[in-house]
Amino acid sequence: MKRTQLGIVLGVIIGIIDIIPMIFQKMPCDANFSAFFHWVILGYLISITNVNLKGYIKGLLLAVITMIPIAFLVWWNNYAAIIPMTVSTLVFGLLLGFLIEKYGE
Image (tube, rainbow, N blue to C red):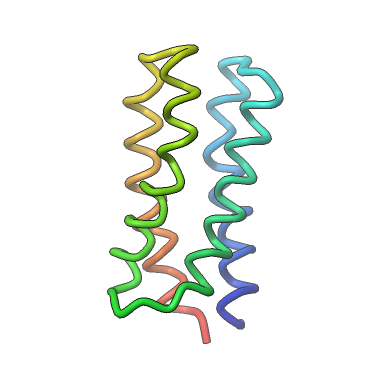
């Protein structure tokens, strides 16, 4: 599968995984949509970004960079949510970068 297609597909999968706990916590729909599309767009960005880094490092770096604006919004509304958000960003960013590098053409 081409890298961009794989990045988008994996972004959708990780986006769904990320919002499942948010749905059970009855988070607002806009937060769920934001988190979902964050991962879809991030999968695409990781797949097209051409930097000389290992895939997992590139995924981690881009995930953290794209999380920063969202983190400010979350901080103002629910500062305790920053910890699980950061952990999921680190784990899913590493995973997304690794999988795109390993399985993308």
